[in-house]
Length: 407
Image 1 (spheres, rainbow, N blue to C red):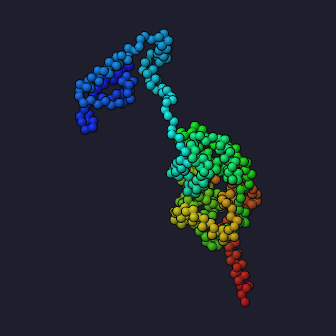
Image 2: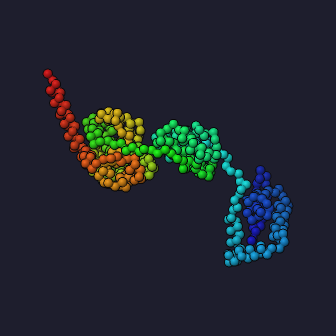
Image 3: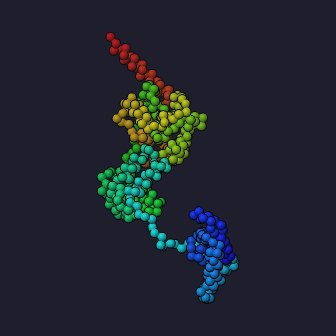
């Protein structure tokens, strides 16, 4: 092995001129110092003396403590055979090998409440949790920190979590939701190397009796469309997009008019607008196309100004009241209705799920309600022409009723 000679270079240290010598990785074990250690000398004589002593240490090091034992010599010859006599390969192999440092202290323990705060901040900072889901996640994590907040996260056991879940005064679905957030919290702790495992995995939860997803009937859809057209309500456009495409409410309100392509018959859902942060196309069915052409395209702004959730909700409540559905509005009903009738016509979970942006199992469990093919065909008959005819009939009946009541 060839050692690079130690050389003294002129340098400035603490405002004074001096000589500096770098100790590279070859010399570090000989001089028993760190790699790239710097030594400063005020005079050339001191530097030369250090170099002479270093060379003497190298000579002593090369002499060793005596001759090789038979075992050591046999081992070295065997290694030379493995690398075809190339000593540099042996040196590189030894340099690349790193003995586990058992003396390295573990990371400082962190309290559960500290890790939870860091988890929520980072998820919000990187956009993993949206404004709509952050309060729910914060509530679920707080349930856990109220019990274990002042404990070190590395000492929480699976048995403790199992007992704690049983004491929660929540329904089965609520416990499942809370444990989902707790599991992600411990995943975060594992990423930070504060734990080696996730104790929230394998926790037994009560079984949930899954009720069928709720959807609107064809008659209720008809009433919503009639109310929107008759009163020219601003929710009509988000209504037809959600009802006839299956887009999520958040995706609908964040969608821009320029994302709607009638020529390609699809709506662009960018990852920034999607709940799953994944880009996808939502198909524009012939029925939705008729409604989009009927309503017309005005500008390139979002379907709901600024994608504002409060505006969307105010518009929705206005239409629900006009349609007589204020007290019977189904949660995520527009998406459920589209998925239910779409499956009733296609009979293919994969096709329906691809349009919804979910896995087939998720779509089947949470979005598709029972519906007959006959109902689905009635749903497809809710064209602008049909709704306009109903509005005209209502207007005519209203005028006739007024005329009959006049003296």
